[in-house]
Image (cartoon, rainbow, N blue to C red; front, side, top):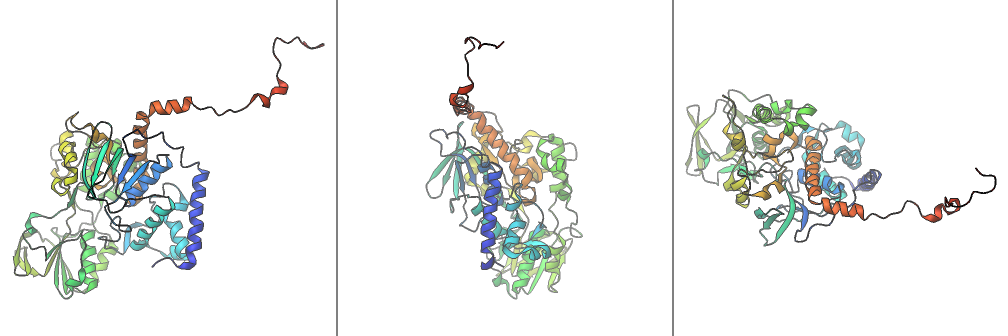
Amino acid sequence: MAPTLTRLDALEALAATVQDDLRRLGEPARPWPTTPAGVDHDVLIVGAGQCGLAAAFALKRAGIGNLGIVSADAAGQEGPWRSFARMPTLRSPKHAPGPELGLPSLAYESWHVACYGQRDYAALDLIRTEDWARYLDWFRSVTGLSIDQGRRMTALSGNEASVRAQFADGGALTARQVVLATGMAALGAPRMPDLYKALPETIRLSCYDGIDFSIMIDKRVAIIGAGSTAFDNAAAALETGAGSVDLYCRAPDLRAINHMKGVSDYGAVAHWADFDDATRWRLARLGLSRAAPPIRPTVERATHFGNFRILTNAAVTAAVAEGDRARLTAGGRDRRYDYVLIATGYGIDAAARPELSQVFAHMARWQDRFVPPAGGADATLAAFPYLTPGFAFMERQPGAAPWLVRLRLFAGPAVVSMGRIVGESGNLKYGVPRLATAIAQALALEDRTALYERAAAYDTRETTPADYAANVIDAATPPESGSI
């Protein structure tokens, strides 16, 4: 449901309120000192989804105006909301904060009320996905963020002074700081278990890609995985007219508790990155060792179809192509399908990100910096990058790639080092200020001479001699008669 034309005036008024709120706060701050010669931007953000936009807004408020934002997506296609996010609503509560960073007039609720009215918002349960996408479009517009669209990065390298990003269009940009805000696949791709790679791509599909579900009308479909994405895709197939859908769950029942949601205290969310490695590792294993469970509305969306089944204890032991169909073996039984959809999450995969080959070659991972206690090993988590408390990559071998500290990961794979403050819209209020502060600190240290010189050159007078001339008397002047 798009905003009605009668609400356009309300949106314009809200945009004016946002600008007035920023003015009242004295923002944006005074522009940053001049960018050094030979560098295109002070900061380059790669990615223009909710994380990239929120980070750019925070930096702009800090006066860092020489800011570049690039996105491989076409305009209006940034992030997952109009592509593979196949849920009708977000999963977080409607009142959860987002990229507004403390400005109520910029919050989702304010936008929704301007578009549809207070009564509609009061009746709203969860935010409609299409509305969240529209809200982010409006957020981008009202905050004045400009994005270079359709620029796919092909290489990333650097030196002690800057990072260089090259693009498929032949262009390149250099920046003193670069932020990767490229989502869950920032350091890899959706997982494709080896078991299924032999199946033809015509029948084996990834749930994280574009899918034409109309090809599944009256067909038998298998979904591999038991998380939210698996249920979303099962529902999408059923709603389009699939003949039947079987969802394969390896466990005896669906996982019901999301331990990462239990990491909700301010101290644990805002300061995960400040904990010692052993504490961060324990928290990561608690919340990330298994996939997050689907929420009730996500499950109910699929289970109300009579032709939907959840196969439990269904670890697939064989996946074989038989003509234009697939035969899956689980629980000692064979079942045949027209399509097999894979929803097994994302992984760290250097081969899937050739543009980051130099990053993978030199970055420190958790396995390079931390030895888990007995019984606490986790090979998957060990492969994640080991970041500074300011989201920056670190070198595996000191001195081998000094530019890595200029590269910051504000995306899903930062989770082991940084916790819940990446990826989730409700926790941007914790992550974005930390990121912006770290970047501003790094730039300030580099620019300390320029900052001093600008301070020393300040010559705005508070008064002039004319303001007090009538009251001036030289101390050597003889006192007037009768004075002491």
